[in-house]
Length: 432
Length: 144
Image: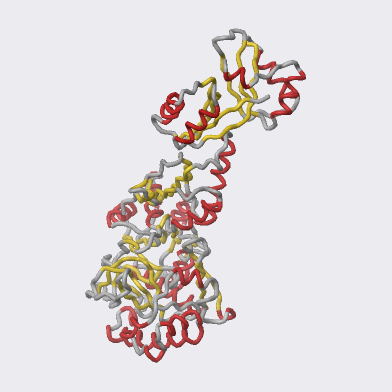
């Protein structure tokens, strides 16, 4: 039988959800107008005032926010509460190295945790469960989000964080983890390791909540079969809160967006025009309950489709498809957002030419990032040790910018593939 | 007294070396000595040629990253202990060797030669000449 964390909200009537959205949106626009000069200015430029926004049907009148706005307003420009009311930041990568910083009041954290709790209960979680969280903890929202949700549900929470597979498996066996939360690629890696080590009969996993990167239906089937679990997708972004903006139910045909907190729109990425229901386009979110960092009409750059077809799980909130692509050049590698412009920034800082190529692949279910850079006369040395040292420095600088390890390959000039004179910057070989 | 060595960045791929050699050959440059230092992804080809300027120009215009380095060329007695005799002089003078490679010639059967890359050419040259070891002049090696 389907269980819910907050049935009165998750299964509310369409009218009830609309009522909440209308009331909260009007209040939120006023809050932002009063406290965020950056956005107020944008509204003034568009000649919109809070009195023009009477409900969801007026949402289209508001200006968009993009990652560029977040960069420009860094760090406090979009903050809507005094810092004394804020209790946490989380952060994600920006487009050129300046990170995005999102702020949370305690109330914001509570609501975020509740969203994650809904996802855990939808995956069958109860207070009898042992919830094994191996998303990264820290600035990344994955660990803290699911950790908070797991507490709300009352699961025994294992704050494992990422990496150290030996320890993951030991705790999984010794403490009888029943719900696994991590990126799908790490889940696939753990599944391989469990089978290789003959631990399949010693684990008690029944469900997995996997997000922060794209994964295919084939990958889901593979993980489900190998681990003997049901694998659920979860979606979110730091700018809006973190994981739990939407989550999958037992039907596994899309993720229910928590519409009591987030209003979703699909727009044409080129014109910004709102598209009718069922169209494929860019997903835009408006936070209607966030206090500290309330983004209105934030363009996620994720391309997907919304569906209001009734769901067999009983939840009434709109469902979004898995993101089918991006309307910018952001890559998600090992669950981490990577922009080619960040890599370019590092190369320039290290004295390389802007002739590079990024090759992303998935080897043994784990993403790999290779950066090929053309050698320049200025950087070249007759001493191998010196060239190797430069290469090592570049790997270090990329790691500190991107947060993930990349392989650097120095190549001869003019060997990077070009198409009609223009360098092909990104080669994504992953089949997902 | 140093000689000019040309180092060339070569991507590890089939035919990569043949291509560089072709560029040199087509420009009429004769190779006197060579060595390669390689990693998994690339190699550094180091050569001594009869006409360094011509070689460098040919390589650059073919798009290669190439660089000239001053190195020492030392004749050694082509007999057991010959290399050790030269290297021990440098070791005694506390001179570090970055790399070296050896070559022999058709014209002089008694001697072999080593190309030495050291941090400071002058210090190495001083240590060697003090022990009566004569360095090769550029003209000598280019005309071998």
